[in-house]
Length: 99
Image (cartoon, rainbow, N blue to C red; front, side):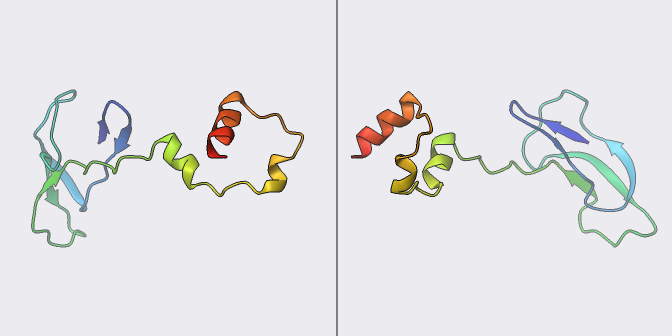
């Protein structure tokens, strides 16, 4: 099943082997985290499971913002600052603020 949010579409794989026995939510319906969206009838090869219903995927951890990711990048050496490569206005402003 594919779970779609405002930002991402995630494919959720069944936690057990078996056959989809019942679909509890309709396509397009809003669900909350860990809410069952269907139930699975265990197959012959499936190991016994405590919960027969399949929970919705857990929310992904929030991704870091671009500024946090850039801040974690290795700082440029002094030699890099003297290169002939063009520097964007935003980078120039940031360099001036850091002086």
